[in-house]
Image (cartoon, rainbow, N blue to C red; front, side, top):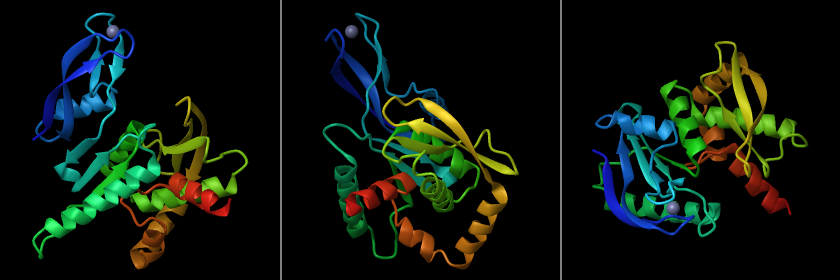
Length: 229
Ligand SMILES: [Zn+2]
C-alpha cells in the first residue's frame, strides 16, 4: 500500500496556497503508476493553480518494491539537513526499529539515498540483479584513478544500466550543482564480474568499506577528504 496525505503548501514563486496530495510511501506493486511518476520526475510534483509554476516538493519518500526485497528511503539533502545529519538520524531510527522488532525477526533490508537520481540509479541496479557494493567499489576505483578529472566534490558518478552492455558498464558524470550530465566512462564488465566472485568468497572487505545503509563511493571519498584536511 502507498501512503499519502493532503498538505497545504505555498507556491515558491507567487505564494498562492493550495491543498495537495503528497506521497510518503510508494508501493510499486499496488501502485505501479507511482513508479512511472517517479521515473519521469513527476512524483510529488505540483502545478500552482495560479501562476502554473511546476515544482517538486522534496520530502522523505519510502520506496517499496516487494520483488526487490529491499526498502529504499529517499531522504533529500537540503539546507536544513545535510548528509551528516541525515545519516545520524537514519542510524538512530534503524536502531530504534531494531529494538522494537521481536527477537527472532530482523528489520527488512533498507537502503538510504539522498537524491532522486540516486534512487532511480539504485532501482535500475537492483532490478538488473547487480551488487550495489561492488558497483560502488568500481566507482571508487574510477574516482581514485581520475581524481583530477572527476573531483567527488563536484561530480557524481552514475551507472547507466540502460546503456550498459554485456561487455561494458556505462557510467556518466553528473555535476552535483547544475545536475547536468557530462562525460561517459566505460568500464569492462569482466573486471566487475571478477570482483563479484571476490565478494562471494569474502564480502567483509566490501562491507567494511560500505557498511550501509548509505552505500556511496562519493560519500566515502568526501568523508576521507574531510578527514585528511
Ligand atoms: Zn504560483
